[in-house]
Image (cartoon, rainbow, N blue to C red; front, side, top):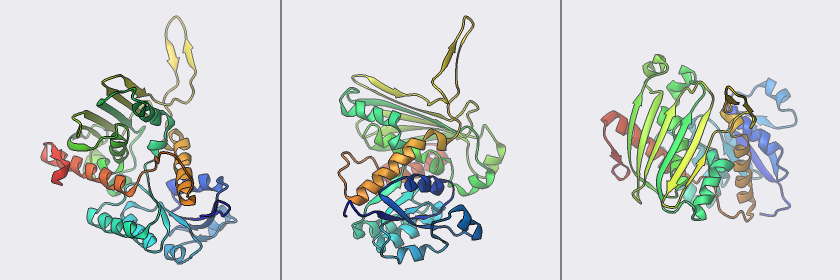
Length: 339
């Protein structure tokens, strides 16, 4: 693709995540936002998004030959069908996680992606967090040695609404899906077995909705290393996001990002600010870098190492989430190859 030509992009689903991508694409000089597509769009959107073409039917996007790429930011259950349709239309695709709830649907859409010769990216934005990626760089430089232990802590500041929980696919699919991806990406090893434990310690209504609010998953890897992920729907002190990779030569650890780096010292105590409270604030730069790399790939630019998640990465994360859910139900470890 000529670097002089702007990339015509359509955003399908302009909710919370879609709006973040809209903001980042709007400031990208390589992009022309051709359509904003959302089933909920009405006349008020014309004022809110003045200067942009707002539509409700995504098939109109796919039938426009001038559209180079689509961002699929709709509810999860719609992802497989939309990915298939966009791939068949020859559009480059960025799809938010997870890829869907039904593995058969996901694998069918994957066949369409493979046949289409398009750029396909999946929204695992945490790969682009500069603190987490620094761990990867230490590993690539050989500073860690052979990875032996991975620890991931991911705790939300407050639980989502019960209505959200009911349609989320569960904690493993909705929340820990990011951590499953990072658990592969950080050490660059595949997970062979998972063992999950979970509990309801925060809100009984989450249990009534059929989900857990607290979980620990132990991972076994193809090189023999061990990993552990802990999730909670409520950390009263803020958005708790930490990763540690330990190996034969050393350790790399990424701590929380606080509201400020200022610390107060006195004879009585030392005080620092709490971690950032909201994920959109915490990962603001990561979302921007993620979509920039997708656009660069569509343009055909040289980018060095690809960080952007692939469709294969998305499938593997879902398999790990399914394995964790099965392990929780059966109260025993689950081998990934047995799924």
